[in-house]
Amino acid sequence: MAGTMARQPSPGAPVAPMARSLLAQARRTLGDAEWADKPAERFTAAYAAALRAAAAVLVARGRPHRGRAKPASSWVLLEVSAPELAEWARFFAAHSGLHDAAQAGISGRISRRTADDLVRQAGQFTELATRAVYAGPPQGVRARGVRRAGQRRVVPGESAAVRVPAQRDLRSA
Image (cartoon, rainbow, N blue to C red; front, side):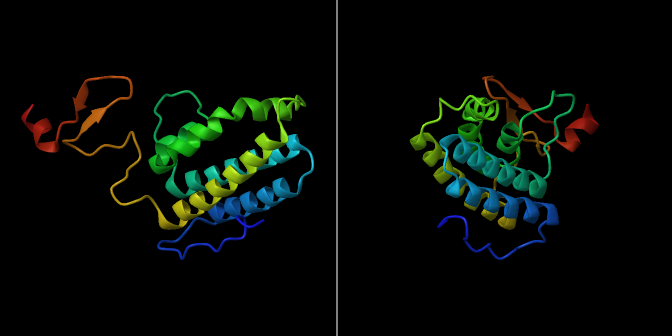
């Protein structure tokens, strides 16, 4: 349990109690994953730990505005809310199908190595999520979907940028 007992960063701003609770749950669940015998149990516990750590970041950062969008997974929301963790969000999203299969009792696809790798990755992610919760967003990084007046917005998959008018532009229109 080397990665699960790390000290929490000193808080820069108050952290929501729910975020602290979710991080504690993530660390406990990660401990369960490290002690589980069966690969499927290790895998599902590690995935659950990562999901709780992601939820802690979402609680701390706030949920991104989605307008009329359909419900999204925690991994999609994390990618938007905490761009610095986007690669991790995509990594765990890629394992969602295997997690769902394991939860449904289809565990033959999960090898010991796959489970061990996910336990290790979930431990690293939980540490990064803890730092993200206590430190807040990195300097200069903002969640996508939030723009300031006068900035250009590039939508993934589109080549053209859309200019957001500044306040003075709106008055002259």
